[in-house]
Image (cartoon, rainbow, N blue to C red; front, side, top):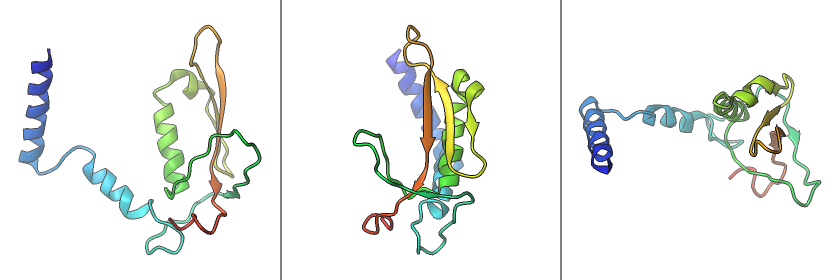
Length: 130
């Protein structure tokens, strides 16, 4: 079976080489050109919704920093969640700020888990332009 997978991978690679492109490369390049920009960068795309300032309120909260445009980040999350039927059925997007709520199941014996994702503005001068 490993030989079949390797043969399929090589065939795909040859097809990509013959067409001069690889699946996803052009899309990723387009994203890098526009949405991975920090404030002040040439080509910076401003968010379309209100970004609230980030305040570290809880000692044990999960936080990630990115300079990905929040509209694109929200779109990517929504696209990913469409593969989860439970999340898709319960997904609620806020129209004025970057906030989404949904349910998902990690353990069927415990039932659905409520999830809330918010996107904030990085107010830390030291890291906001990284």
